[in-house]
Each structure stands twice: as structure tokens, then as C-alpha cells.
Image (cartoon, rainbow, N blue to C red):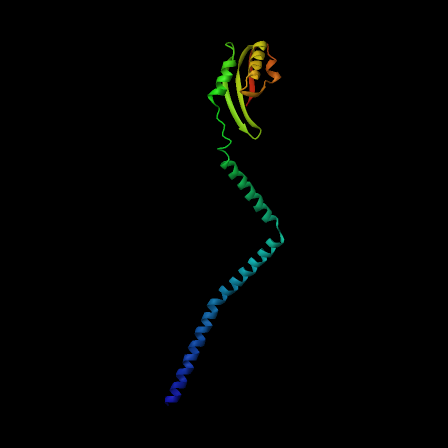
Length: 165
């Protein structure tokens, strides 16, 4: 009777153990299938990325663009140009008393530094003398006065482009 009891107890133990393994398999199988599917999708994406180098080149272009912007920021202090009092004084000293300057602006772009002078001149001759006086100044490399400024005979609205030296 004791042997038969131990056999029944062992049988019950193995049945409960098998039942627990069956429940564990039922619970874990969906996770297993999901992870194998994700693994195969990830491997497929990896193979397509290895075969197609264009996203890699786009990333390299983006990295190069960021590097150029960082270089621009780092070198900004070296290329710093302030519209100094000397430049403004050079313009104002060459100005005749009858010329009225309304605006002095500064531009710094890829083509270089420019100073713009806007104002009013009473005649073409006075405007031409002002331009010649600025051209003779060592503070400026070039002076650009568009021909369209000479269309009007009197009370001329002008715009000068100056490139500082």
C-alpha cells in the first residue's frame, strides 16, 4: 500500500509538472513568435540598408553640413568686422554740406562686406563730386554708384555701395 501510494504521488507530481510546462508553453509561444517575427523584419531592414547606400550618403551630407556650420560659428570671431567710427567718419568727412545722408547700413554676406549709404543730393554734379571724394579715400576699396541715380536732375535720391579696405 505504501508503494502504491508513492507511485500515485509520483504520478500526480509528474502530471502537475507536465501541466505547468504546458501552461508555460501556451503563455510563452506568442512572445516567441512575436520576437522571431521582429528579428526577421530587423534582419530584412539591415540587408536592405546594406544593399542601398543612399541613406548613408544622405547622412554624410547632413554631417558635412553640420560641420560647415560649426566651422562658420567657430571662425565667426576671426572674421568679425565692426562698422567702426573711422569708416563712418570717412564718409561724413567727404560729404558736402548740401548732401543729406539718411541711412548708413552694413552687410556681411558670402560676397563680402558692404556699406550702403542712402541720401539725397541737390544735383548730379554734387553727387558725382561726393562719389569722387569717396573713391579718393583710402578707407574704401571701391565705390559703386548706380547710373540710375543720375536719371533725376535735382533732389536726387541716391544709394552708394562701398567696400571697405
